[in-house]
Image (tube, rainbow, N blue to C red):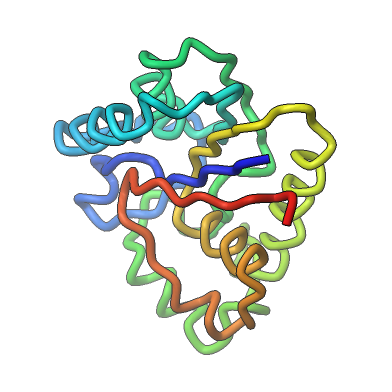
Length: 178
C-alpha cells in the first residue's frame, strides 16, 4: 500500500500560535491554508487514491474535501488521528512547550497526554491500514501525528522524532509493503 501523509492546511489558530485538540472549537483553514490544499490537490490529481483518512478536527476534513475534488473517494474519520491532547486548549503553543519541554516524551500535562501516550494511540492506525485492501491512501492529520508516524516508518529514535517538522499540505509518500 502506498501511504501518503499530509499535514492539514494553515489555520486561524496556526496564525495565532494557539493549541487546539477539541473538534468543537472553530479552527478552520485560512485563505493561505485553502491555497495550500488546492496546490496539494493539483499535485495529487494524478494519484489513484482509494481512500482518505482524517481526524475528527475540522481542519483535516476541510483539507481533505479540497483534495477530494479530484478523486471523489470515501473520506473516513479516524479519531485516533486527533491531535495530541495538550491540556492547553486555546492557549499559546509556547506555553504548552514550556510546560512539557523538559521531557516531552513522558510529561502528561493536566488534561493532556504525553507524547508516549499519543504514540500509543496513533501507531495502531498503521496496523489497521495494513489490513485494508486499498492500494493508495491519503492520511490528512496534524504535525504531531506526522512526527509519530514518520518516525515509525523511518525507524527514527525518540530524539530524532521530536525534531521533525512538516509544512502544511506537503505530501509524504511511504510504501507500507516494504
